[in-house]
Amino acid sequence: MKKLLLMLMVLPLVSLGQSKITSAVYEIPFSSKKGDILNSILSRGGEIDKQRSNDQKLIVSNLNFRNRETLSVVFLFQNDSLYQASAVLKNDSISVLDLFLNTKNELDTVYGRGKLKKEFILPYKDGDGSELIAIRRGFATYSCTWQSSLSNKHKALISLKINKTNVELIYEDSTVIEKFLEEKRNTLKQNLPK
Image (cartoon, rainbow, N blue to C red):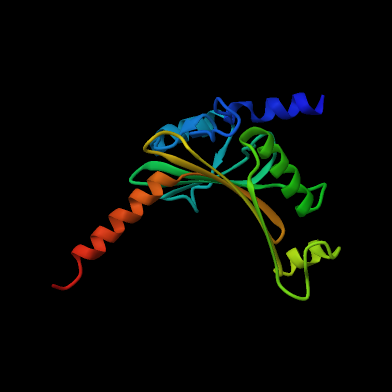
C-alpha cells in the first residue's frame, strides 16, 4: 500500500524513463510565464504572499508539494520565464534527517540514484551518532542532486538539502540559468571601459 501511495505521489512529476528528470513543476513547464503560473497556483488553492513576491519571484503558501505540506514554495523568473521552483517541506513528526532521507529515497525511486553529499566539521563526523546535533549547530550538511538532459537545449537539476531545521527541494532548468548568466557577462563586458 505504501508503494502504491508513493507512486501516486510522484506520478505527476515523472517523465517517461526512470532517470529522466521532469521538465515541469506542478505540471507547469519551465519557461512558463508568471501569469500562467498564477492561474495554476490559485486553482490548486495556493495563496500568494503579495508582500514578499515581486517580478522575479512568486512566494506561495498553502500548497502541497509531492503530497507533503510545505512552509512555502518559491517560483523564480528571469525575463518573465520560470527557471526554478523550490519548496521548504514542513516537518512535524520526524527528524529533519529522517525527512531528508525519506524524501531522497522517494526521489531515487523516480529519477535513479542521486549524488549524496555529506560534510561534517570537527568534532563531528558521519556515523558518530551526533548527526542531528551537528546539523542543528551548522556543523554538518546533507545534500543530494539528480541531473538530466531534458533535450539537446535544456538540462534539469533537482537538489535536496538540509538547512539546519528544514528540508528544501529545488527543481530548476539549468539552461535558463546559464543563458541568464551569459547575458549578464555580456552586459558587463559591454559596460567595461575601452
